Picture 1: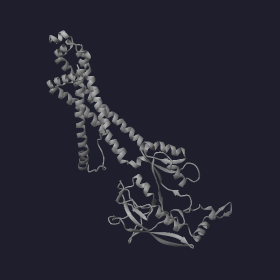
Picture 2: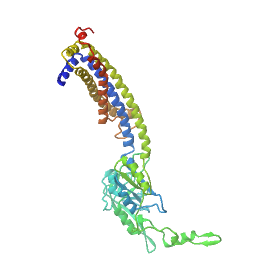
Picture 3: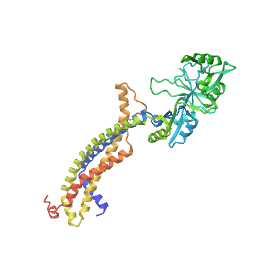
Picture 4: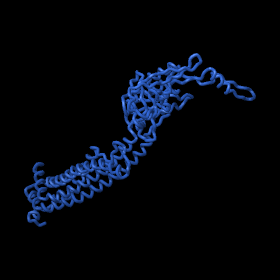
Length: 449
């Protein structure tokens, strides 16, 4: 008997007992659906909490806090070049604060609570710096980004000129000069309500203008000669009855714009979360203090893995319960087809062919159950993701983060559940199929069941 003949025989017998078969398929589908839905909830929560709520950049970034050895732990240009040679680096960002109050003024409004910070706009764009309005500035132009809370009304500020007042020393006197910059964008509103972004983000071009006036890095304003003299006199102390006087050589040198550049708040962004741990270890070996949130996320990942395993056991139990129905259906099928089996054996059918017929029928039940269960699981998942946020918002008056997912069904989950359903169905049908091959021909033909 060919495979085609076997399939025709199976389909003919299926049509005779459609109701019983459909009930068995339904039980199998429920078990498969139950398994997929349970695991999809675990996967959905993990994706939402670990991947979405903490943010992609947060889990892929490594914060560099300085050098482990040496008196000077500042991160300089040479260190930044080292970082760029590390593998699996997406970009490197930094935040350098301008070391004086630039009194930013927009038309007649003074933004008194807005410190100025220099960033690399190109690197920030790669790292995922988001805007609520406007576009990222051109690094080669005098353009800036306003923090979301830097000004109350941000509706009409794009394209306007912001005046920065730079103070500097000349001929032992304090002078000032206005540096105009154009606002091209507004930063995105912070995700947490208590956070306030009042920063003014400038680029390398604007920082260079400031440093050309102050002759110091980051616009640091050194003391005047008179102020320095008063300070040094105030530092004089008595040691063993002798007066010790300090001079300028005892004070730390103020770096000039031509000195090796110092970088503050350096962050390395990896291409993927899986590379973060290795990169962090490499940096420690090279002598740099660093921190990443991945170590904390590992504990969270273990928790979700344990939950997912627990849910999978419950789902598997549901499929095993469905296997009882398959075993019962196949046992009844063998009993009802006693005479047919006897005739096949009488005309020379091989026991393997008879076994194959019943295994095909049990496999058909498992396959149909997997298909129906998968379709229902996707429907339930869609309804849950649509309805639960609405219900939570109505009854608990809480709004979930945008994109929060309660249930997520990856293809590998569907494939695994379908294979499991098929295997369980065939194992359930194996015993009845083997029993069919052991039927006595004479008794079967006499219908002596």
